[in-house]
Picture 1 (spheres, rainbow, N blue to C red):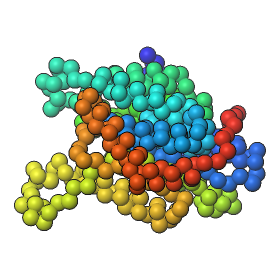
Picture 2: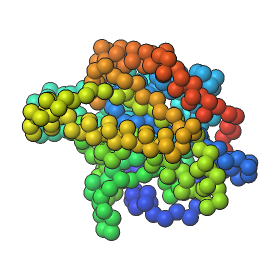
Picture 3: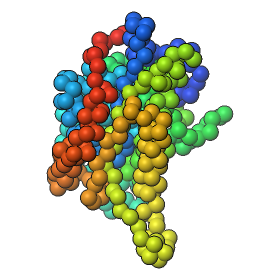
Picture 4: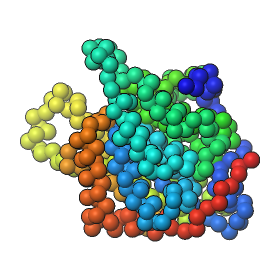
Length: 356
């Protein structure tokens, strides 16, 4: 277990003005001055449904003929559970190993003690010890500096501080001041879903909660974080040539009749409003990205036939998520979307560029 004292640091570094970029892509750009294309792969939040995203990502990797998605993708973005996937893939971990976090370790992460079953109305549903242990086991002592590819990951600071209001925080591996951050702390900070886990207090002066509270789909934020690293001339070239693949964790299309909504009161709306807001905000972001980037953007997101809880780690739900993924991959529409993703990401595999 890594001591907290090793990673407690000031988070002001995440929002300070930067004068030097450590982006691995920019290091590559310096070696090949005419290169302007950037490939970005992002993953939404959705708890255990991150398994669906990984199954789709694995299919993309297979069609590309790569050993790892980090062989050719320069940037990975993630929110909440998507931050686990994005950080792992950018670190060179294979999809199959990332899946084990869900299938093998998920039941341990979302296991309630008898005490929490009794007092869950006074505490978060889960202790984070198993979650932290899982992340540390996969990311070990690695820091942002050791990443194979770049990442953009969101979280939300509810504490604020002197001269700093509460609000979204962005991890961007292209920033020099973030290089010493332990990798495991990033998905832990991004996946602190309120009521499920306590906020993450690993950075002094910050109380970090789940990124889904600000943007369950990280794609627009990731694009902005990448583009800010470039000077004005290169900004325009990269903006016009960025290739974006966004993978969701499944959506539920359940229309609500006028009769149903007319008769609903506070208790009826309470469990529906948050999923409705998150899903429709994502739909709006997808529509805006399609209008802005056109053929350079593709969205992959299966339709779910039923809801899957964020903490669902049962064999039955694993089997259902596997089936949803396979049905999407082999459907006419899903197959077309994956082929589009492959075309956007296809290109030369990348050398590993040092940022030092």
